[in-house]
Amino acid sequence: MTKTEARRYYRNLRKEFTRVEINELSEKIFQYIKQFSFSIEKSFHIFLPIEKNNEINTYPIINWLYQQQKEVVLPLVVGDDMINCKVEKGFETVLNSRLIPEPIHYVEVEASTIDVIFIPMFVADKTGNRVGYGGGYYDKFLARCRPDSKKIGLTFFRPIEHIEDAYFGDFPLDFCITPEGIESF
Image (cartoon, rainbow, N blue to C red):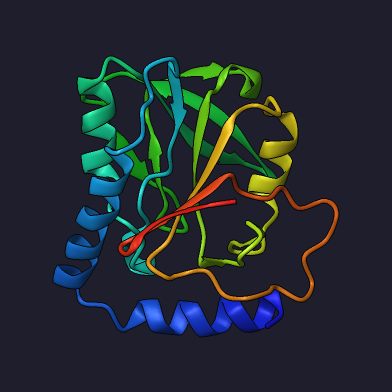
């Protein structure tokens, strides 16, 4: 399956989920996240869900990170790139013109300071290649991260066998978490 085919197929599958199903599946993913030992990691990059896209509800994960005394960093799209926004507990957001929630108050931080990156995606293959939205934002961001930062994809769907057009510039995942479990690459 190519990235374009996977993107189309899994976007359509995700559109069929009800809000109740999204919350139930998101909760299962959250329970698997809590199985990780993040004792030495301090800074966590995580996306906010885009409701119209039926994305994973990450707010319970964010609240849990604060309970664990972790730093939370959110992405903010600026032009054709993203910046990293450290936010405090109780942060406020505003929807941009594409209905993507963005933090209002934040401190910009360097990608090299981030220990764990939770990545939105449609699906991964069995070697950790991922299919995102196709904008290249996370590829640019991951290129600035430390090689030892943990890259964890979050998706509702189990990995597929192979993504035919994965290329050298892609950054493979270390882990993928689905409602069915944790895949390690």
